[in-house]
Image (tube, rainbow, N blue to C red; front, side):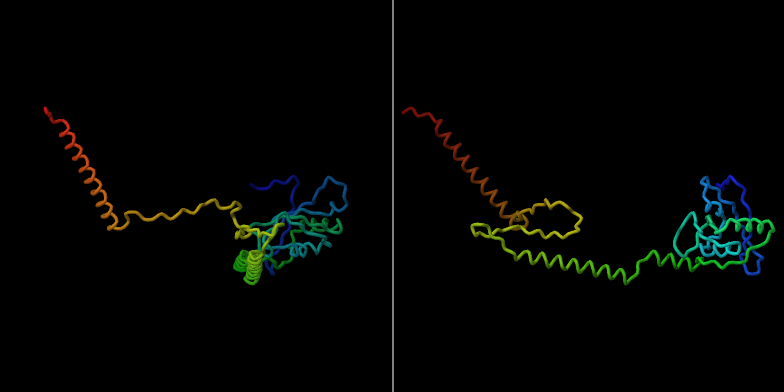
Length: 243
């Protein structure tokens, strides 16, 4: 949506080339403040500032009208890189008379002299953004070396602590469990896993299965003979003997 301003904006033409044939319109108005401050009376609000202009470019554009004290943008991005869209900001002058000169200049339809932009565009912009998004190799190597030095010291201290023996009042040596957990580990609770006892393999080999089957057959045959013997004895006990 287009911005709506309460007060009318004035147009100031800015040359985009040294010959002045191509121009860009800056729009400005005197900044109004509710506070009775003398500094607030010498401030202008400027919009449609070229996206490849930094604060030095803006100061140079308005320096011909009066001494510029400061330039404050409404938004900031990657240093040294042009923005996607035109910018807005506030320009503060040393003297309020500079604003009257700007208004008079804009009414004459004159063009402000060309100012070479300082922010990178195109391929230069992409190269800067590419380098900013990737760490410097030397700095990264220094961080890795420091981390490994701290890790080696920690491991050495743990090994030294394993050789320290504590003795109680009666002269008995105290045996304590040493933790080998390193600092910075993701887990904060001790491991609750229990090692499972290795059980012997049963019926894993073919010969084991064959021997097991033979044992079962032998048990069945023995039981069958015992049952047959009981039946024979029961039949003998039921025979009639008159004498």
